[in-house]
Image (tube, rainbow, N blue to C red; front, side, top):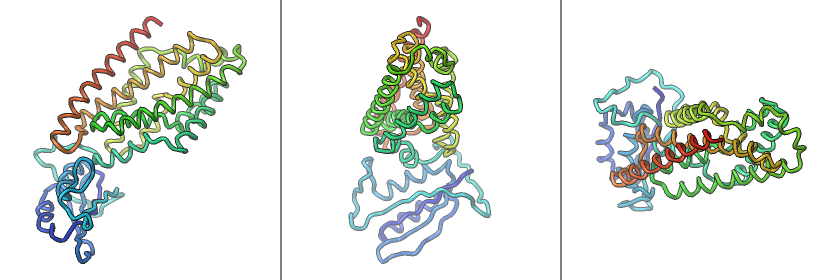
Length: 338
């Protein structure tokens, strides 16, 4: 089992309350750090599977509300919690296996998950440059039928991240993150379509249909739906369990950028039938990533802290899942008619 180290600083007057938290059997070990005049400091060792359970307790102890603001504490004497990954622990501690194990989210904490995914919803210079560079690389790979170059474009393309952020926003009922993710998606696709459309206008049209890679991205079938659903689910499971290396494979399997580039090129070259096929494949991948991500977040019990926010987010999540299922069914119908 992987571990996390929680370092927490809190006001001296809350020492007695903190000692009660340390009695939790899921805390594997703890150490008191150097104190200041008004503050206490501790390190807590926790198995990753039980991190959310402990951090929820600590959030309440620290007096932090859903808006991540302090309540009931002197703002000049705040508590602070830092979560650190642990490479190894020697000797290996005995892992607790409580009777309520199934009710505990088996993965990294909600806060870590939010921090890892929400960054993908930001529009900044790096995001725009990566979209431009990956679009150029993907275009070259598609036009020259160079698979290695296309795979390289998939890996550097940042288009998967805002879609995962959109799914997480639904799980947490975070409308601000949802808006950021939608805006980032829109900007990313707009840049991709613009660059590839211009390229399609000026590239010799007779050469486009000679590219096997472009023709492959102009076709979508049921196998594409299954691949996108499974790959999207694998990506989210890897994130929630802290094994983010799997994401590279997901970026390649769920090819969001190549069909987007193919759509722009074929539309610019006035090949409407092939452009529509590429657009269908793009839509299938985006819908399947969002749907599978939402289903995994729901199954992993990724939700807000308070019961009221959980109830509201769960209701919203069900509606989002229904929405994406309906969209997917409509896409299947269009695939059959195409």
